[in-house]
Image (cartoon, rainbow, N blue to C red):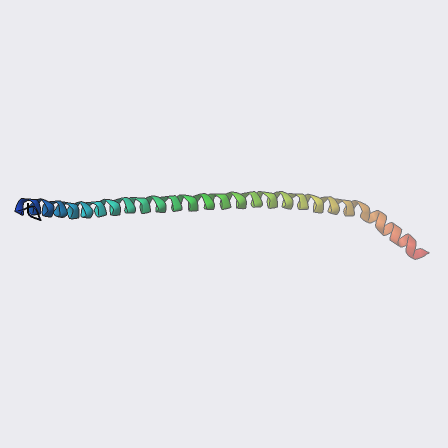
Length: 103
């Protein structure tokens, strides 16, 4: 019984090592493909999050715009009401002022 096991065993070991190296390369290629798919999925997810964020901001802006439009309409009504009141009150105010100046 010698050590090493003979030439056939060495050849088998070499094939196993070569096969393992090929398998490692294939595993590396598969991992790279999986990694690139994973990166692609992450980019897609990032893009989707960004679009959702933009949509949420657009909704907020639209809501603010609507609130401002309502406030503007209310301000116009208040101004119109004040203007109407002043037009109606002008003769009385004018008369009252004249009366108070006479005294």
